[in-house]
Length: 239
Length: 239
DNA sequence: GCAAAAGTGTTGTGTCTACACCCATGT
DNA sequence: ACATGGGTGTAGACACAACACTTTTGC
Image (cartoon, rainbow over all chains, first blue to last red; front, side):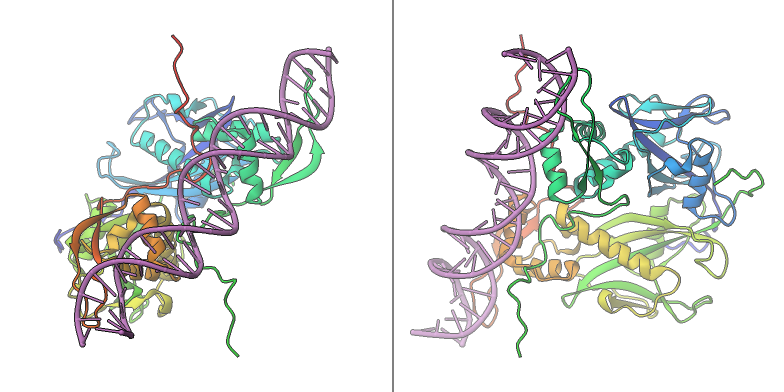
């Protein structure tokens, strides 16, 4: 690759997008929007829009999402990546910065008529490069479930372990045992018991204890899985 | 946050930047460039430049870096984040997409006179928000050392375990035992012995075996530390 | 009492760190 | 022989998954 002094500086249009996930009916779903305009008119796409003057990317995506869901319901929002393939938008050169957003499972935002939840495991054909973004977002989410407290973002304020299990199962895409989920999250002090319990259902059964996440913002809980810093217990300074 | 139909679509200038790391003299260092122009004339900054028409962000940063180091020496390059604070560049609105780049420890690229390596633990004052980018890049690198084979990117083709230890120590910022480093990386099959050995130095000592990374591109080696998918061994389909 | 659901005890396995010890070479 | 640096053996701590078992409720 060689420096090309003839290359013209580009001031590309810049869009923001978000893959907003919620666990609904025990399945991970993503908020999609049916395009009203060409290109890809009628196809499903991620919600978002153009970056405006004077705003950051994050405030821009929050502004665009506000037309779809109440922003107070967005419990987590993080930047994923910026896409720049010149041909990614047939309508003309456009960069797009993608975000991952999460919504707790106990809210059901009123949606505009052109917006719907879709199962991530049964996506329709998506416009642009949006399918790749959804998959990247799911990978990011899955990874962070292992080494952060990101579960707080799709869980209600308080919940039982088996409710939480349903959420983790949906997000991870495989079975999760409540026994082990409880052990892992308690051992790492992500969960605290609230002291209250949920009433048994009509079928009986032992009432479940209610828990909540100790911290409701992202926290890394397993920084160094291997190659940890050496043990400081034995160290003693010389007089 | 409310939708503002008056907001004007922005076509911001877009820059690309890279925090290029190399372990030099046993210390993690980053390539910095002394600015010739205002703003921040004379201050140190990350190398990069403007996005040009028709190129992707990645090809753009490769093009700009080519003026500083031979691109063939860049063994890893990944996108970090896109910065968008309106005031981040006093010269006017500009987005910037930051990359993390790595160079193996056995090359010593010829640098232009305005470019120098600086220890990451003793950074000078940096222009713009570049200090935050360098720290983000280091965090990303440290994290990936735990669960990927990213070490290949700052290691030579072949190396002894204690040479590799020096690299990991520099990147992680703490002591690393060669014993454990060898065990972890062999257990995970990141390293393969080449069968050759390095000659002893003048001081004698047992000649060290030479290893190389099994794969020289990024690979996740510890996908699920916890909450793994259940064991499939016992499963048997019913007739 | 019995079914249902939640939660605890326990065991086996694997991974990691730390440290003692052994190996191969130069002088 | 002995210093030097490389490498292996091994033990203890811990985390994890799996599964048996107990607890607490409704009917």
